[in-house]
Image 1 (cartoon, rainbow, N blue to C red):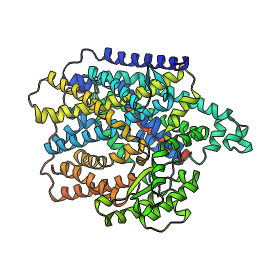
Image 2 (image 1 turned 30 degrees about the vertical axis):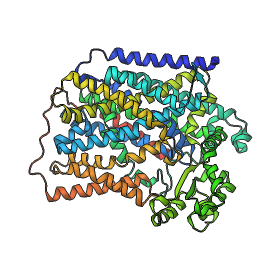
Image 3 (image 1 turned 90 degrees about the vertical axis):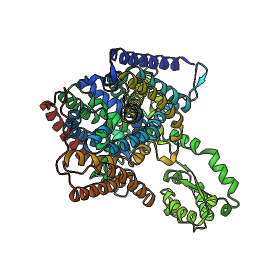
Image 4 (image 1 turned 135 degrees about the vertical axis):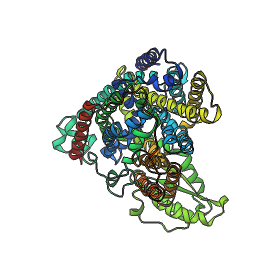
Length: 634
């Protein structure tokens, strides 16, 4: 191990030890389930604000959003951050007062008071499934992927660094301090990690702009005017096609039309109804403290695109050759060897090959060969080059479906792994590996992976809270003592961490369209229904109790049907359609059988429910700044 890697590892381990130690020391003397799961309801505003950011920002952003910034999506993906700023202000003043008044431990618990026991159980099961099969594995994979890009091929104490090793390291770190200290340990660790994350991201942006300004102009394809400029001037020219918020209405990932409704659904679900985020606010010392913390997080969210997406755009122009090489390694031999084995008799192969538009542009001859093979395998005419220059996924799905319906199950034609031109998810890792000097690289890597651990810790804490309070206490051991509940929560943390580490490498599949897209796509089964049910539960006093279960069941069925019937429709549009369907059904149910009187929610507990005027003023300012950013970059 050379001195550079030694220094990085030393800084990394020092930071991790400091964070974990701080969290454990600050979380001492927390007793009972309320102390373990909700930090004794004593969190103050700055802990809440930074904890929300650290729990939210992870390599989902630094890998996923940075990668999408490097791709054709560009700055448009910032809508997830800037829309979140407005959403958070809404959550602080619309959702949080009702939840703190109810004194709940979990979001599903609210549904029992407002609708029914069955609604609480159903939402608990759906959230557990999403945590374990989507969120936890995806976040572990993204952190492990960054480690693999930066340190892959290295050996630490005789152990090789790869995605599998990194996955287990992250899972173990998160499990340690959640098991020991609960939510309060998470919150104090998040304060350090959230601060380091913002500082580290800012440092990467400065270094990336510096590298862009000093790069030979001919390697960047700059105009004569921009060639003599600094990093900022070069960035404006090179990134001109990506520095806007508007994508075509037909875009599959983030069409501009989704800003009307679609994008608000996952945002309000995530920030207002997602247990691992909302748990920070449920632990507020008072409503005013919670509102101040949430608005602080809203202001910090405005900064994220500048330290995540901008570096991703720069990384593509500096290192697209490396991204192409990473993609080639990902594509490599197994798939193309299958092509070589079957191309003499394509009609008998039962295989077809997918590729994206980058692959078609970089390797037109190979793309043509693949299309000819696919056409013969599917007994379909070979389309013109124009038809597959943007990738052949659409053509393939249109031709695979009818062919497979005609064949018995044993004769199904299988679409092979998607072949890609660039590995965009490598963008931020390449910046760390190639631009950041030793020591600082260890600090930034520790901050980023610390954020991953924070997010994992938040998810593990939330998943264990839901299982313990909504499932175990309700169905398995109704008379469980406080000590027993905490013990079960800790066992769940360890078990869930192990399961997530096992599943994490499966996310490394190009068919998911990148890690960020993977999370958003699959949460679409849950978020429209949950949001619709809570809107009726919070703001329609006479909505009947049956609305809870009905809305939660309609949503995954509607979204799944749309996913199957309209695969080319943007997932945000599928969310919008599912949400409108849920709202329509619940509205009809309310009109036909309204409750005779509004449901009486639990009486206020000891929490001070006085609103914060300062947070309200700051919230209005955040909304105005967000709208200004949209005007600037539209």
